[in-house]
Image (cartoon, rainbow, N blue to C red; front, side, top):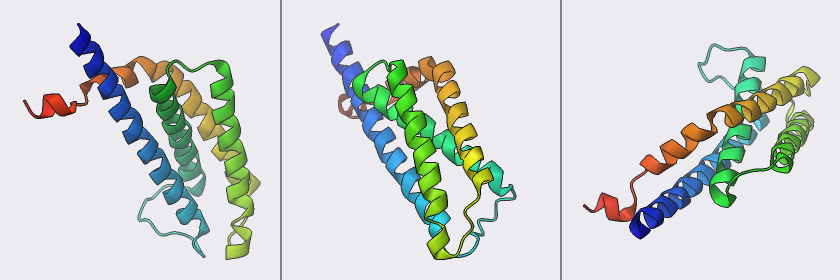
Length: 145
């Protein structure tokens, strides 16, 4: 039983580390993508608003997952904090696009907020699946067997 607990703990730590790295990578990609002069041509045929929605849905989902895998079950204050971070970062992102010749659009920010809220709801619903997936990650001892 003790080795199962240690294995679960190791799996959760590895999953938390992976999710924090993914969250940082997402934030960097979002910042670079929105601060390059002119529109970014990604080959993705989606509207700008759709991209905003999915980016902030992903950001809130990644933040919540990273945080929960690190500290355990999140409380309402954690959800509010992630919502606030996403909302403020969306506003910051829009305002800091002006110096690079891009447009500050309040509708983009609205889609950022809607995506973040959807990510909060999705996390709440998918929470058990996140733990199940984290437990599937092989630990160092499992990988060597």
